[in-house]
Amino acid sequence: MSLVCAISNEVPEHPCVSPVSNQVFEQQLIDIKGKQGNPKYIPAILKALQDEWDAVMLHSFTLRQQLQTTRQELSHALYQHDAACRVIARLTKEVTAAREALATLKPQAGLVAPQSMPASQLAAGGAGGEPMEVSVQVGMTPEIIQKLQDKATVLTTERKKRGKTVPEELVRAEDLSKYRQVASHAGLHSASVPGILCMDLCPSDTNKVLTGGADKNVVVFDKKEEQIIATLKGHTKKVTSVIYHPSQSVVFSASPDSTIRVWSVTGGNCIQVVRAHEASVTGLSLHATGDYLLSSSEDQYWAFSDIQTGQVLTKVTDEAAGVALTCAQFHPDGLIFGTGTADSQIKIWDLKEHTNVANFPGHSGPVTSIAFSENGYYLATGAQDSSVKLWDLRKLKNFKTIALDNNYEVKSLVFDQSGTYLAVGGSDIRVYICKQWSEVLNFSDHSGLVTGLAFGDNAQFLSSAGMDRSLKFYSL
Image (cartoon, rainbow, N blue to C red):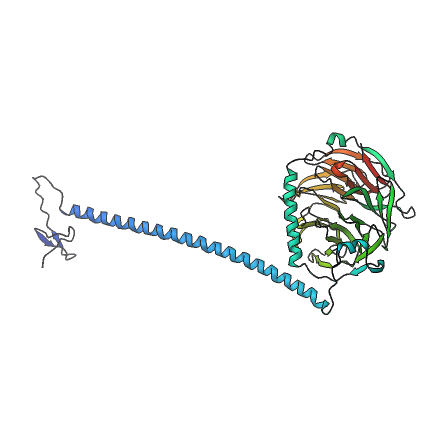
């Protein structure tokens, strides 16, 4: 058995044993007079340290590899978790929608769903000229949702193309500022109950003007011929909202009598009555497809109805708010819309999901009118606080407030088709150029409140209606 030095791990030439540790060491005898040399075990120590260093470095490298692998696995797991959460959220929404549809259908068990009415029959009127009344809520089918989505895709693409340039035919601001009143008509509605409460232009023929009055009548007027085309009677209370269909000879009206009526202009009769609400209908807006109506009411609900069948597809309310709706307007792409409330809130809704996706507080009175810009970026709102607010829908914030005169009553807001001008109607008529938001026109010709405004094609003229029963036109 050989003895090995505990330090150098070599066989000592002069072994000695430590009485403390009982280990063997090389006895070091150093000649004081001689030259001192390096001990034998120093290289072995250096080698051991080198081996230990190499081992530590190898272990560190292995740990780094394991850390990188763990990070990749964690990242993959997080992506899987996020995807799972999205799937769960989508499925939850689908289940909720299915439950709502089921709850809607259960009370109607055993009823036969009304058949769809062709567009030609819609324009001509129902059998015997009698209106069809439908108030059954049937839900939005996947086909309807897909139709809305397809239309929005087309409109968004067209809007992006138009947004790059301003139409050459559009009236310039310097010419618009020279507009003067060129015509005024005061005999459209009854003088015994004065007041035109709303108006609209036919999109395909802006010579045709639609008005609704305090006399409960809806009137179609030809601007070019200066004569009444049709007087439509049927509402039991004043008419507060009117819309002209863009491609059919059909108009729509709403009233505090809680009904929405569909009229044939050629037939001069009511062809449908949609009873979507249980209180005054305060707002009406036609979807870009031309097939669906949005309505708001003092019963706190907004409703989405099919004009071809008269069916109420869905009705929604914000139960937490519990407040009357005062107006409603579709966004240009038709997938979202805005409503105004009696407690000064503006709410943005997702049509497909039936959810309130944004709220714009800031007004201090009931909201009286809202209007979306054609480019889809801006929303203008007016309220009983004598102000008009402009909202950026991308940043969801108010970027401009136009403070009007004290006690100014905002009754109507409308952008022109290019989104270049904004007209404000109420105590008078004011027109602002967008982006600069500077005033370019101001008319005070009406002797009563201005309740309706509309621009002609490319702002070639401006029309207005008021409580003084007059319909006025402005141009060069």
